[in-house]
Image (cartoon, rainbow, N blue to C red; front, side, top):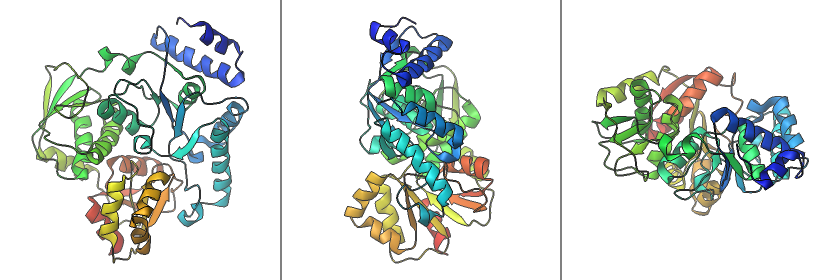
Length: 390
């Protein structure tokens, strides 16, 4: 790669050890993927925040980078392994909490905004169309590329940290328009009425189209919550970092020749695949983190009811604060449900604590089965609440 004078100085160590290590990471990536140069990024989002995933080696790396590394662009974090303020109510051990707080402290020393959410675009880290960014979390990457029209690869934790400390990323893959074009038309032949329909659609596309970039037709409307949960599902089950929906998403794309259809029976098949339990002992929603509109819907649905099983509503702290101002939090907590800030069912240490999970998130089912050996029920929000209160 061709480096500017400033970039060469960063690589030589003139701006400190953390920046030097960061440049080594970025130039190695650039060389591997054939990038010609580094480009500036407007923001960064870092995954690999939960101590459950990082463990001691990851914490040591962060503490080393925090000795002299400072973020040069606006940077936020993915969910941690616990609610950073009320971790005890979620059954987190003091030992785990101590380690998790050290992780957050290291990021804070680097000047990272310790907002722990997979939906940074809901709390101020919302890039504009055409912005180049360096984000890590798969659903957020997919949403940013597809719905917002930003440009980002799916960064690993270390490469995202490197971009935060340098303000740079190698220019390759989805930073180039030629790599963002659709490869298959997906004609949706059935209405998408609920969030679980959108979650099932992501799984169905993965089953039929694999990792090909989809141009989706036949969808007449989509609100942001639908696109949020679809981004998570198609990223999880199709490995997608970008998609196009005709008439809805902003990016221009060629129309490929290959075509597949998704019918009602395909969604039903995906929903059946995502359910393999008859009984559950935890219900969780908010993967990706709930929006303010979802918090309102949940509050109204729980009003006057009492939950009889563990029930988590996962949300960013900023959205919880807004929900509290509107009275939604009071109604939710009056039911006995637990609002889990900063974390979610996909990254918290839950293995062995529960056996079965009910959720409206296809992504949460993937991680619940894979990381926690849960049996699962995939169902709409009203069914989740019914499961929690019966």
